[in-house]
Length: 328
Image 1: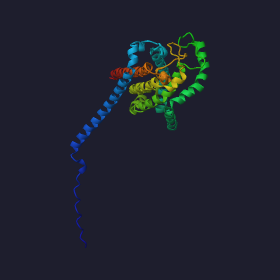
Image 2: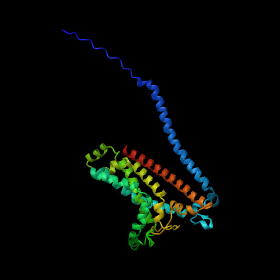
Image 3: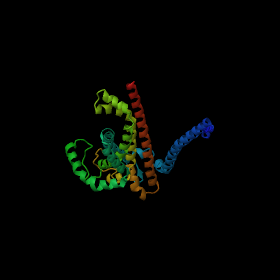
Image 4: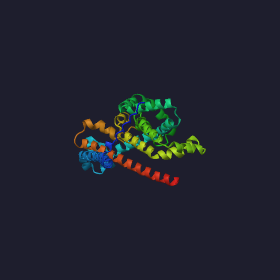
């Protein structure tokens, strides 16, 4: 008989990776917190530097025009008049038109992708949306000049003949370069942005909430109104505000199709001008106070963007509080 050799007892394994784990974790947490705070403060510092540097460059125009820089509509560089009100108006009109068109379409596409589309259709649609988001703005502008503006002139004329008693549907310009064409082109440009973010927000809605609504007898649309929209309201507003920022800052596409007429008019079929487009149009030939005034337009646009985003956050906060109160 052979004696069975006693197996050697395995050595005790010491977890050397846990080198004073609690102390290491605390240091890691403090370092991570400092990194996050530093990144947030860096963003604020960059924004502050941008505002200060542009405001300093624009100060000669602000000093010369005073409050009239934003209350006057007379922009005549050859006569030394720099009133930005008509340009602010043009930016506002184009952005509102773009949002009115883009937001419903984007929400509808996002709902289709998250609630109805088969997997293959969803993949193809998402790819197309991503390609549209990556298309340069000058391509949209050239497409607007060559294709969209001439094709829409008969449509504008028909709407004017039918609804001309409404001031916004006035006599259209013959070439189609107007507020409406610019708003339509910008809407097509911001649809991919709003759609992508809204789709991601809709995908975060808990599946149990949707199934519970359907189990209680709700139709698909009632489930969307009762479960998807309340949960995604803040994200939808945030996506819309991001699209609004893109619309307000768009330059080349608007410069090509808006018509370059500095005026305030209720007619959306009239030619106009916007702050970003006039900056790119006149920057090369500007000097002195004219250059400062163009930089001042950027400062005004920056301030408007910050104000709009703050108001959007306020609206979202109030709406979410009401929703929580109704739910409780």
